[in-house]
Length: 131
Image (cartoon, rainbow, N blue to C red; front, side, top):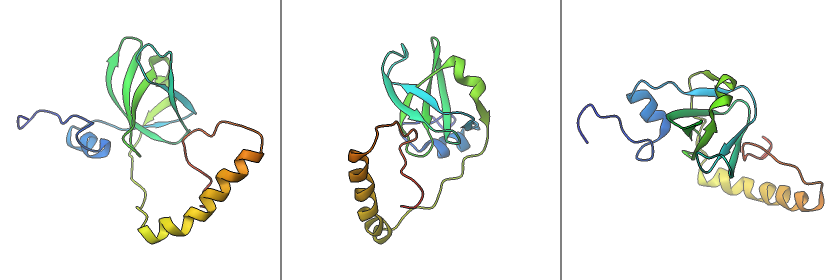
């Protein structure tokens, strides 16, 4: 890699790349669908309001994006750009192994309770904060 060449987002964390290449992260004002392909015919994941991403490149009627929290790459419909605002992403604290182990029982109970309840989509991929 040349000295001034921007890093590829898949080689480093999106926050690091955004900072080094002066790319602004964006915060979602609404829940958004993200897709596997630029044709936007296969849903990859959903992004909850308030989450952050980095726009990588325009591909047809979509943008390749990378989620700041986990580095997941997907495609955003270009028409959803007005639902994003420039904002600074600050990573949350990392959990220790002991903290993760202490929360596993609650996470498993949450999943088991979901089997017996009405099915609904939980955008963002995160359980409630009490875990």
